[in-house]
Image (tube, rainbow, N blue to C red; front, side, top):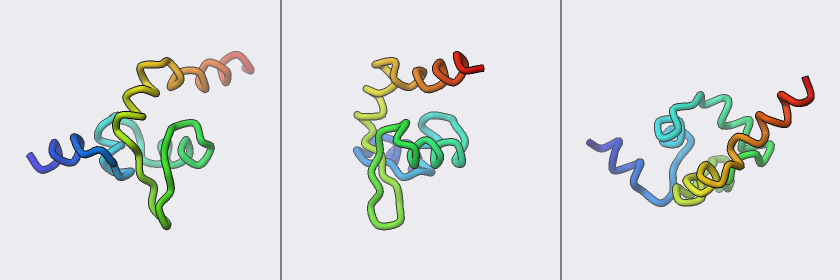
Length: 73
């Protein structure tokens, strides 16, 4: 139950984002560092606005990086 409350928070930690998107932690860190996913670094920790993440996915921007990479192959 506590995890669901965390997921419904406006700001997600990297661990909460891993659970929310069902993706790997290392992959999300890499995407955040490359600015491929919307997020902000606060001190030494990343924070992600849940609404921005939802919009990022809905807009199709989440798949564009993968598509570009596939086109280069």
